Length: 336
Ligand code: ZN
Image (cartoon, rainbow, N blue to C red; front, side, top):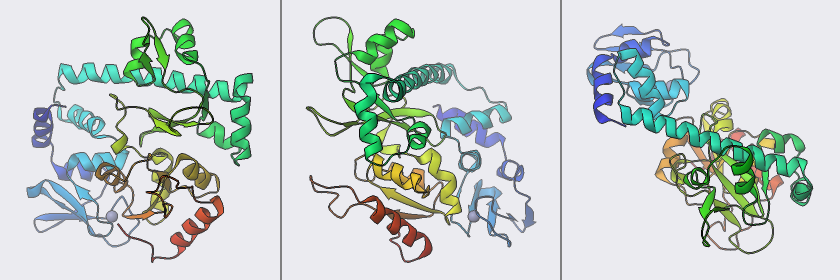
């Protein structure tokens, strides 16, 4: 993303105008005041300072420049906010950025097609039956499986890659680029990266698929596998279910709850605790915290105490649900 374009857009737009589109601002000396659009309030604690080109809310603690305002307001990524404001400012975004956008859009299409394929295998095929039985056994409802597009990546070397190349006009190199396949060791062709795994599609805050998480049901290999880093996927900036949880976080008093695993997060959502996200099997990163603080000012960790240990089990669903329920009604939770 060009730094030049960012600076140019900033110089052409005033923070008062951009914020003023959605917030009614009143001049107060060298600043402007209004009601914060990000938390409910009756007296204005939202301040825009033109000389510093920034805004800040003393009520919920959010603040930043025109880009972070639009990112917050419209739930956009930085590149999306830049594009929106560049159009407004009449600033041309460079060719390289346009090409990258097109590449990203194509990879997203490939990923979406693969997710649909794995989902169809899970719910509509003979080879998906054991995995479906396993998920139902673990307490997942069909509605949850549907809503979150869970899938089954069959065992075998190239089940997915073969099908999608033959029937969906997707090239092997594209599957490699989006992190779903690897070059075959023996000569030509590609092999599936996810084999014999339950598939959890990982999405960004706007609901766009960025990668996959896969849980091995039986056989060799690590129990959990995530997509590698790609043009779409950066594990250290991703949180499972952030797209579904961001709204409920605001409703839950700007509180976010982080659990460890996909299944814990899904179970929490299924039980009605929708302000829950899961880290992707890593220690929490600054990028993940930055993503969360766009929607929540209070972050609660509901990790298993033994999380660091190899044999860490997952929290029981009931234990987790009661913990979250307690944290939502009680203000003494861990604060980060
Ligand atoms: Zn606020």
